[in-house]
Length: 297
Image (cartoon, helix red, strand yellow):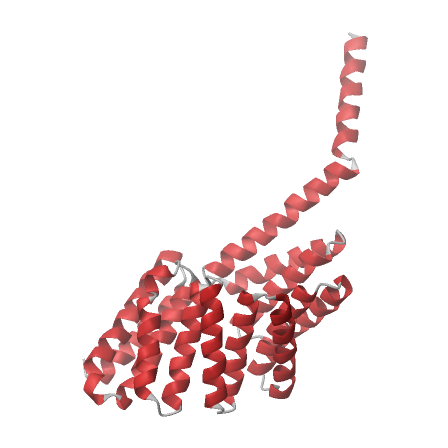
């Protein structure tokens, strides 16, 4: 009996050593950090940005402890996206500045370009337009040299937003159109639709109403290619608002434009409710009510 007990204790000790080996601990830590990454992605995708923030903070912290800078950069970038979605742009900038330091240490131009692009977007949002333009142009040059079409398309869309704020509509339209082409080549359909909508808005602001309608219709027709996500729900809201603002410029097409604006909002509501995205659903019903109010309905 004593021999059996000693054998059992010995087996337990071997098992303990196995579980506590560097390889086992490393594997457990990796699985642990991936859990937070998955939580952050799922929360963000359904529009639960407040919920995604702690997950990304913890993921970034664990990547840092594990000395995995590439993962830390990705987590900090995602954290900045969540902060930006919440309108907390100064927090987003702090996160991105840390990410940029780590990306530069890695000597990874693609990661550096991605972080610079995000910084340019955040600086645009807080009105630091000179810094934003420098960051966006630097990141665009890097993405182009690396032939990173999807990243270049994102940067061009953000650069178009900056030019639109400055009322440089010709430059904004050109940036948006190039973004559309690159997004199509990279099969980034959501980004392509967003750039089309932004180009349509800039064309209207530049007095080119018919051209604006054509691009908005192209974005409208692309709806079946978009997967159900918070980004799609919000994109459809943007499309509806673009149509609504175009009505006054196209009195002959007023009813058609109104119907498309309402249809985009109804589809956005369907997507938001399917995801449980209450914030976006609330926006949708508010905009839909305003649309009906405009028609005295």
